[in-house]
Image (cartoon, rainbow, N blue to C red):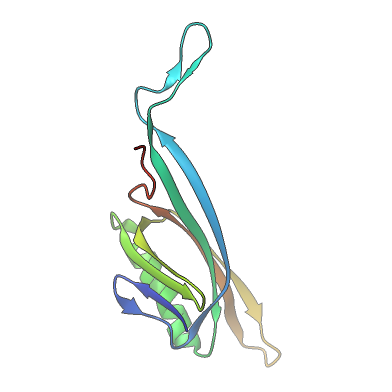
Length: 131
């Protein structure tokens, strides 16, 4: 079963996922940098595993637009609770996002609809930390 939940609000009835790209970034703290001799000194905070999710309209233009509108409205929040299932696994973590893109589709009957949109979610906390 696929679903999309943002802050516990479920958008799964009429929104589907066409693509999920997984990324990871290892972030260093303020003590990282190059020593005088060129050796890199690491101050690893952890590994942050994020996701670029592409949503498309499963059935309802109204519900699909509601998800976009919700994400735009909450883009100024410190974070959102992201839960996404692709039918095989579930992704769940506190995340923030700073941008999204969407594509306009021109329908055969002359009515325009939003075709899909993509948002890159970045985790608030590292999922892997130095031991």
